[in-house]
Each structure stands twice: as C-alpha cells, then as structure tokens.
Length: 317
Image (tube, rainbow, N blue to C red):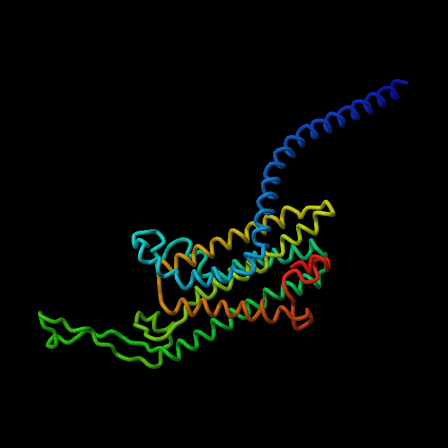
C-alpha cells in the first residue's frame, strides 16, 4: 500500500508540474505574440501600399518616361550640385559597395522575390524555374552588352603616354603643353592600369546597368498587387518572408534611383551617359515589351505573373 500511494503521489506531482510549465509558457508566449503583431501589421500595411503604387497603371506605363527624363535632364543638376558634397567623392561608401555590383544585388533580391512569389501562388517548381529564367536572360543580355561595349571602346580608342617637354621649348611667357607618345597595342584596361591617358568614345556602363535594373525591378514587382488581390478572397495573406523580400526590392529600387541621380548630377558625362541609358531602355524594351509578350513556351519565359494567377486576374493586367 505504501508503494502504491508513493507512486500515485509522484504521478500527481508530475502532472501538476507539467501543468504549471504549460501555463508559464503560455503566459510568456502571449506577450511575445502581442509584440510581434505591431511590426507584422506595419509590414502588411507598408507592403500593401507599395504594391498598389507599383502595380498601378500610372507607374507601369510611365515609369520608363520618368527614367528617360531623369537621364536626359539629370546633368543639368550639376549647376547646383556642390563639389564639396560627400557624394561628389567617387570613393563614397555607396559607390564602392553598390555601384560596381549593381547586377549582383538586383539578381539576388529580384530572384528571391520571383521564387517566393511563384511558390506562394502555385507551388510549381517548373513554373518557378520558368519565371527565374527571365532574370537569367536579362543578366545574359547585360553581360553581352558590357562585353560588346568594351570591345568597341578598345577598337575606337587610343592610348597615350604623357612625355615631359624639352627644356629648350619652354619659355616663361607661354608654357608648352606636354607631348603625348602613342601606344596602339594597348587596351583601355591595360592603358589605365599603366597610368596612361585613354582617349576615345565610350558608353557609361554604370548608367546602362542602373537603368536596366530599375526597369527590371518595377516590372517584376508590379505583379505583387495582383497576388494580394488573389489572396484576399481566400482570407490568406502572403507570408512575412515574401513581404520582407518585396520591401527590400523597393529599398533597392530607391538606392538605384538615388545613385543614378548622383552620377548624373556630380559626374556628368555627355553623351556617354545618355547612350548608356538608351541602351538600357532598348534592352528592357526588347525583352519585356517584345520577346516576353509572346506565348510562354520553352523559348519564351513569358511576362511576370503569367500562369500564376486566375484568368480573371490575368485579363485585368
């Protein structure tokens, strides 16, 4: 009898201790959930507003005009830009961390957004890969354009080596300009590495990549509003990871626009910057306004959102 009473009493104490632990855990979880509701609500409100703005017809139809006007008339801001500003320094942190890796940042964030959006809408791996191939084709186009521009610059430019003028040619009244010794077998990269002078025609690759990435981000993010409208009747909201990645893409778009404005205002180079912007626009026009509008197939990935939404939503684009 003593053994049975001891075992029953130990069982009661273990049950009581488990109940106490469960109650304590519930009391600790409830304030945590309450604290998480506020940032989650702020995230949902902010992403909903930004999705409506980027998905509106005003932005989707006229953003390229805004970008074109900025590239054309942006150098006029150099008359008001101060040369003592921190953005007038080419070694600025933003230039060093973002400008030379424009496509890398765009590819990572945009690819993540496209993947999460396609999986959230249809959960089809083949459909997700088809939409991701659209990003890969833009990257292939940008790589080909940069390689072609480098070849054209090497073919059209010339490398010069500064030579000090002779002493007998100098006069106190009119100083003689340094002479230049021609180097015909040098490329632009090797010429600049040797601290020599390169003269020739060039196209701004930074402006090209910034314009192309801005247009790409707007095109890919514009379908998020349709995804929210499709989820609303089902009473299901997209997960926080998708909303966070979408918000990061918007922040990246703002950074690219700001860097584009800084380059045009503080480092104006006409007409090389305008040519770079024109090539970026033509690349976007040929892909998103031409090739991607064909019927989705093995040779065409289709437009953003193709196959992800209901026919009613697709017709409302």
